[in-house]
Amino acid sequence: MFDTMLSRPQNLFDQLESLQRLLTRAAGVEGAPGGIRSVAYGAFPEINVGRTPNSVEVFAFAPGIDGSSLDVTIERNVLKISGARTSTIPKGDAQVQVYANERPQGRFSRAVSLPDDVDPRKVEAKYRDGILRVSIALSAAAQPQRISVQ
Amino acid sequence: MSERTELTTTKAPDPSERPTAPAVDIFEDAGGITLLADMPGVAKDRLDVKLDGDALSVEGRVELQGLTDMRALWAEVNVPRFRRTFTLSRELDASRIEANLKDGVLTLRVPKHAHAQPRRIEVKSA
Image (cartoon, rainbow over all chains, first blue to last red; front, side):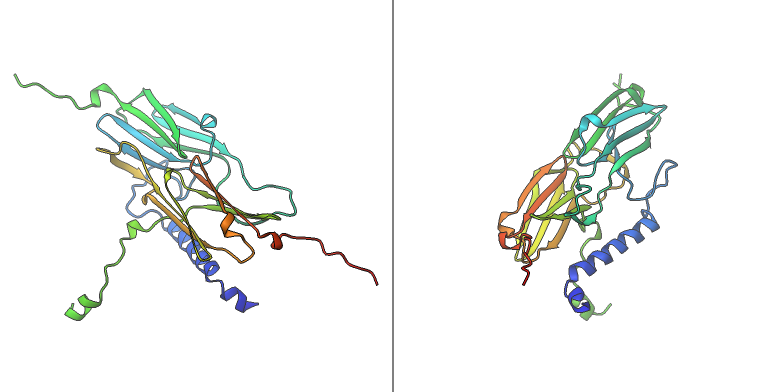
C-alpha cells in the first residue's frame, strides 16, 4: 500500500506545497505595510491597489462571480466589496467523489481604506475575466496641474 | 568566491517569477473528472492547457489593462502567472478533454474511457 502511495510523487509535492503556503500565510507578506484593515494573507478576494496621476485603482481578484451580484459601496472613504460565490461541486450525490475543494465559496466581504484625496462621487466599477476593477478619481485639488509661467 | 563556484553556479530563478498555483476544485462522477481552477485576469488568449504524456498542465498569464504610470500601493497578487500540473491516470481519456474559460474560472472535463465507466456486475446464484 505504501509503495503505491510513494509512486505518486505528485501527491507528496502537493502536500509540501500546501504546507509551504500555510507557512507563508503564517509569516505574513514580507515587506508589505500592515494596514489597519488588512486581513490574513489568502483572504478572498485578493486585492491589489494602484495609484495613477488621476485615480486610485482597486483590483479585486474574484473569479467566477456574476458581475451584477457584486456589491460595491464607498462610505467615509472605505471601499467595501461584497458578494457571494456558489459552490460548483454537486452536493448530495453519493456517486461524486471530491478530491480537492480549495476554491473559496460562500459570502465574502472585504474593505479597503482609500487615500484621503479621492473623490468618492467619481467611481467606476467593471468586472472582466474574474477581476473587479474599481476606479476612484482623485479630487480635483489632488490631480496634477500645469502652472503656466508668466 | 573562487572561480570554480562561479562556473558551477547556475542563475537562480527569480522567486518573484515563480508562478502561483491556482486554487482548484476536483471531483469525480461516474463519467469522468471535473476540474475547476481560479485564474482571475486570465483571458482566453493567455491561457494554455497542455497535455504531455499523462501530465496535464494549465498555465495562464494575468493581463491588467492600463497599468502604465500606475504605482502600487498594496499588492496581494504579486505574480501575474498561474501554473499547475496534474497527473492523469490511465482510465481517463485525455483525447476528449473539454476546456472552458468563463469569468476567470477554467473548467476542465476529463471523461473516462468507455471501458472504465462503472458498471454493475451481476451476481449469479448457483
